[in-house]
Image (cartoon, rainbow, N blue to C red; front, side, top):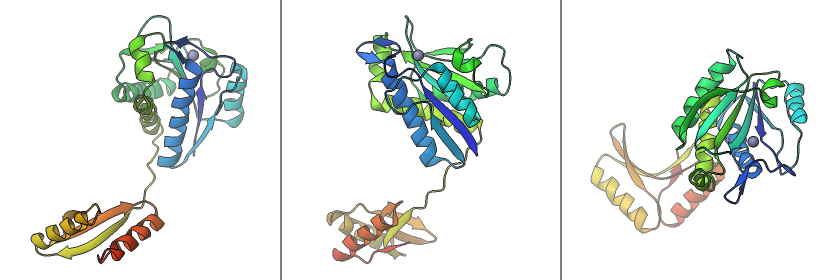
Length: 251
Ligand SMILES: [Zn+2]
């Protein structure tokens, strides 16, 4: 089990950097929450904890104390930059060495691959979160809130998602996290040796309002009409197809 402590910078009475109508504390919470949710729902053997889950003021000491007391394997601190610049950079404690620098290399590569930000490089700094944490720690600065182009990007949910995905991809690679196997309940309404018959049935299903497609598999043309990760949703789809006159079943 890998324990990852995620720290959304600032919060409560401390807004962090402000600019272009944005407050750093809100964006760091959005990014950190998405990182936690994606890792928790899509990856195995990972435990997650955050320094704050709402708009509350938490001191720097309380943040590192919480990560140390929990025995986190890694601390990730999320920030937004300010002060005249543009793009992404990340920090480790000066001269910390491996494995922290290895994690930095991997996460830096994945974030810059996933996010449309200028790459300001991998850096080192004597920050509290990096110095007082007992485990490898990385602090990421995700764009400049006082840069209008960076700020405009940070207002888009899809951009927040790509920042979170970049961090998740980096963490997954750095710690060898495996994806959860998701069972898909696939629905079939026919199988034919003749492609024309399969196409015709798929067309009928589409006219009846279902999404259907033909798949060539093991010498047969199979007509599929839906795939669901939730079995009861798949069963409901079978009932709707049956009511519409199709011979539907879950594979
Ligand atoms: Zn900050």
